[in-house]
Image (cartoon, rainbow, N blue to C red; front, side):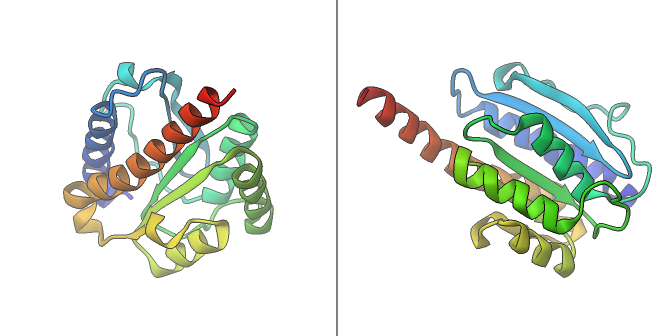
Length: 180
């Protein structure tokens, strides 16, 4: 990830600004960075208050353990309604030792079915894109980009998918609350 670290930070920061432009009151934002460990950079803050990710915060230190990261995030957020989980990775899982692909697939399937979760996956490799499909990312939310396109088109692709799901979730929430 190091060769594209700056592009990733730029893409994440553009994504934050694009999502803030939706001006949805009460929308929460969280950001976890994963390598061989999972570190929460932003956790359950109001999206409107989300600050840009700085160069000092976003430190690349090798490894790709996205099964462990996903398992950790699901354990932390499990049970919350209408979560849009967006994964950005430049590699394939090589370092997970806590969670397997099968465990994470079951965990995500349960959250999708019971709590309306959505998985948006932005990646560089074909293998990672295939894993995303196996974990439950719908075709339109499984975005494969060349590393050179992360900062230029990555945030737009992520925002488009996430915004679409947020609009659907928002209209579902308002129609269910108005019918009660």
